[in-house]
Amino acid sequence: MSQSQSQSQSDAARTPRPETTAAKGTGVPGGHGTSAAGVTITGLHKSFGDNEVLKGIDMSVAPGEVVCLIGASGSGKSTLLRCVNRLETPNAGTITVGEHEATHPDVNLDAMRRQIGMVFQQFNLFPHLSVLENCTITPRRVLGQSKAEAETEALAQLDAVGLEHLSERRPDQLSGGQQQRVAIARALTMKPQLMLFDEPTSALDPETVGDVLASMRKLAQAGMTMLVVTHEMGFAREVADRVVFMDQGLVVEEGPAAAVIGDPQQPRTQDFLRRVLHPLGE
Image 1 (cartoon, one colour):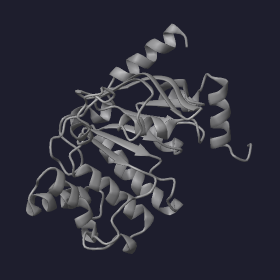
Image 2: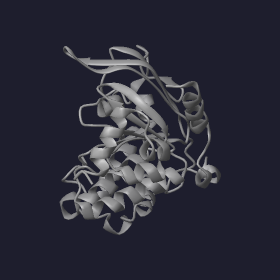
Image 3: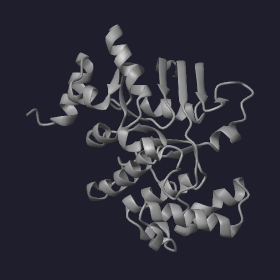
Image 4: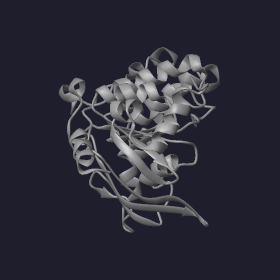
């Protein structure tokens, strides 16, 4: 990477999105004044047996920044996300989330994870609970909220994703897109400072993808720090401050979304985007 490229990427990381500057510090949809946390990753390695999945990742996400991770399946994107939340333990390197060094042997993982919301490919809702109960069970048990307090917050977050009117339904009475929006609302009830999204639309019917992306767009506009693994290039181009292209456990290219997606410089990035954006070879 050239010095000028590195400088432009660093500048992009420090420059807030114009449409979100005024929203910083006002909280996520539903409104509770949550501050945003940044992420710093240095020299991150992760192996599963003899298979080295992450090969020395260096990356940072500024508070309030939206970074999208793109790349082929098996490139290490989801493993990187899971390392940030310590669902996987790195073999080497450091990760800092806000004031917590996630990789420190004495880190309070419970306290750190309370700052992080994560939305997976699968919705992981409790099938025997209503939408509202799915969104209140963790705040009540982990944060010690009263039933009334938890329900007030949960209904605010459900309203923010357009689902307050379905709060008494069970998950099997919802579409896949609605279930994923419930999963987003559930994560937000914990008042996180960082949101991780692991291909949140990959298991959805195409007709429901837009509603989920719209909820994520509102979250970005509210100033939430977001690290998103996605194959939705339109969303990445529109919402992300930066895009990071990964291949075979390495960061190959990163920069402003429009530059990486619209004018990639590395041959591997060019090949990947050509296949994704023009699957029929037009």
